[in-house]
Length: 321
Image (cartoon, rainbow, N blue to C red; front, side, top):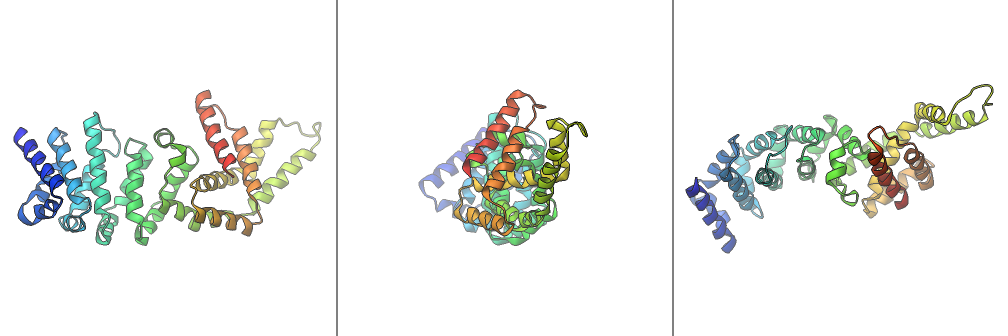
């Protein structure tokens, strides 16, 4: 065991001194194949961790090694190694570091176009969505891998939509993915640029086309205001529920997603949102009003602290408009 560890340490030192060694490893040794075999082992040990680290180093800034490992079924092997953690968290900090190394390997592998295809064919998109749904420690890493897979590769984007990945993305935007809320700061909420693009350009126009929801909710609110208390006694909670049933929930969903996208601070994203609102004869004030009502009616089912945190997130969105 110690001999293997020391050998890997020597290789790492050589690469650090002379980066070109990373290219020679494949040409003069069978190390890449050995490393793949090591990360396939289910049991965790220090050598498996070190193997994942060396593999990541060999793949960084080396398109040649990225392509070679892809040809060696490397994408599938790394996905299998990652899949061991789709429904569980690493037990130790060393194991957690190894998992992060594996995702580094995966993201490096997803640089060449042909490996993106291998990733899609190996159901890598589906695996990343499963990891996101499980809300384990690999949540953010799965998002990062999706980002790499979909960059300049429409088939991965199409697969993401086809397997209902946007439903998982919506849960995160609506604050239902508690792990995301805890592990990523609001400013860096990173449903990747590609996922944001899919939502904004392909899905939101469909929702926003339902301008009828806005009119329906407005009409219901006016009707409730005109009702005489003696004719129909309704408290504020019941009135709010009636508005939700009339389409307010859909409007809130759209508003929260738009708010998160607006907070990304991407000029083109903001311009696109403003255009979509203008096309539907809506304004940023309309969005703020919907968000404010959502903010004011967040319940405390999950506790007072969770309610306060949720309201703080929504208030930050409101202030950004």
